[in-house]
Image 1 (cartoon, rainbow, N blue to C red):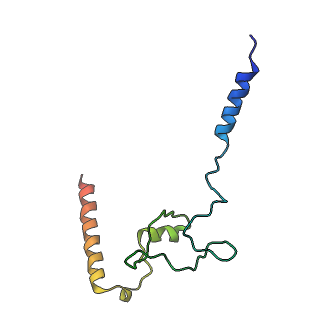
Image 2: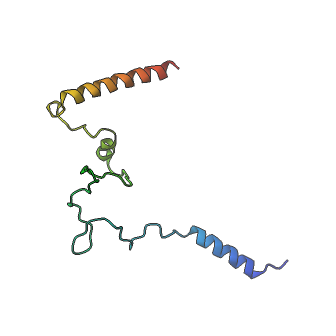
Image 3: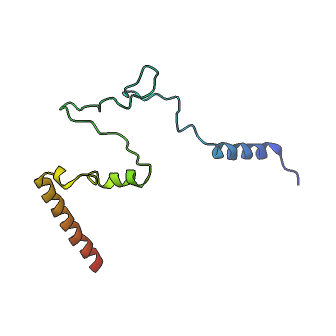
Length: 111
């Protein structure tokens, strides 16, 4: 039995194309709207963009990647605050939510 080289080459080319990484990182793509320094690098000390009502615009894609303390801030941004740094109403809201979570977890433990 004789194999034809064209299907073999086509199959190997197809597998090679699928196995090669796509240019998904776009290293040369310059995202619009990012403040830049004169050398073209992003200005990381620029103020946060603002919405029309003057509040910081925190929309966009967020990716958490780093050591444990960075990831823990994703769940509790107030973890380093001293008790005096928190206002009384915020402290009461926190206590209410902790109590609600305890009730919810007890309910799941029973089920």
